[in-house]
Length: 463
Image 1: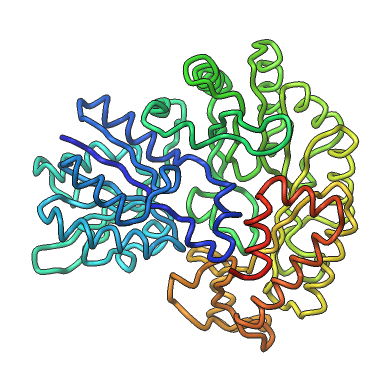
Image 2: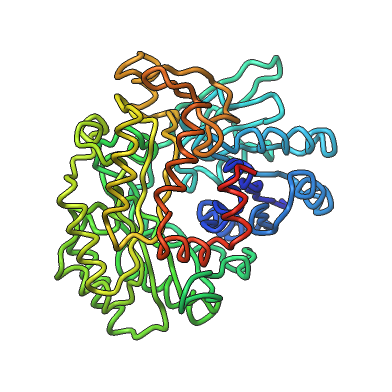
C-alpha cells in the first residue's frame, strides 16, 4: 500500500507565543519508526511534518491528496487535536474512501472519546508492535478485534475500544528511524556556536518512575523504565553523523540521567568514537553531580534543562516534584561552573497557588544567574494526569472551566480557575511575570538571540 504518515503543524497551539514555541520544534520520532516498519513490509511510505514544512492544515491536505495514498496515519497531541480533526475533515471530503488512522497522546489517554466521526481507526499506546497488523486490518485481511490498542468504528457508527496496547518490552527490537523521509534542513540550531548545525531527536529510554502531578509520561509509557542498549544508540548516532550530516542531538527522555550506569557507559562510548557530535537533554536537579556533569560534557553535552516548576516549597510539595530549591540552585551552579548552557521549565496556575506565589517563582528564577531565559507556562490539566483529577475534584483551589481542547494551551489559553483567578486573569499575570522575569540586560539579549527580536516583541505585546 501507499502509506502516508502525517503530523499537522502545531504552532497555533502556542497562540501568541507561536513563533517562540516553533524554536523548539523537533522531529516526530514515532512516525519515523512506523515508516521504517512499513517499508520493511514492502509498503511505499511518505512522511509529512506540517510544522517543519511550514504548511497550514489546508496545504498539508492538498499535498496528501496529490500523493494519492491508500491509507493515512495521523499523529496528534491534546492541544493540536482540533488541527488533526480539521485535517481529517478535509481529507474525508477530498478522499472519502481512504482510511484515516489516529495515534498519539490524546487518543491513547482518552480512547473512543478522542475518535471523531472523520477518523476510521484510532490506536492507543505504543504502536510499533501492532502497526503491521493494523495495516492488515485496513487492507481487509485481518479482524479489527484481534489487534490490541485498536479503536474502531462499526458500520452502524458504534465505536469499539480494544484497550491500550502493551508497551514494547525490547526497544532494541525496533528499527532505526527512517531519517531520509524527514525534512532535515528544518531542524537546525539557532543559538551560539551551534547555530546552523543540523540536529535530530533521539530516545535512550521509555517510561518515567516519578509521580509529578502535571505529567502524563507514566500514564503513557508506564513507571517502569525500559532502555535501549548503548550499542543500539551508538549505531543510530553514527548513522546520523555519517549519513545525514546531523551533528547535534536532543535526547527526548523524561529524565536522561536516571540510570547513571547506562549514561556513563554512553559517555565512554561517545568519547571513544570521537564523533563530531554534541547533545543536550533534560533531567531532575537531584539526578546530577559534578562528576557526572563532567563526564557528560567530555562526551559532548552542551545544554541541559532542569525542572523548577515553582519557587514556592508548598506548591512543589503538592506537585509531588520531590526536589528542593537547594538542589535546583546547586545543579544550575554546577552547570554554570562547567560552561554548560542551562535552561529550565516553570509553570503557574498550579494547585494551591496564589498570585504572590507566582511572583515567588519569578524571583526564584531571577535569582539564578545561570538561567538566560525561562518559560512560565500555564499549568494544563492534560488527560492522564493527577492534575486533571485534582481539577475535576475541585481540590487545592482548582476548578476546571472547559473541556474545549483548543484552550488546553500553555500560553493565551488555559482551562483552570485557581483560587478564584480566571484563565483570563492568569494570562494577564503570565504576561507581566514573563516580562519581569527576563528584564535584565543579559536575559533580554539571550532571549532575542534565541527567538528573534520581532518574535519577542510580538509575544510581549500579546500579538
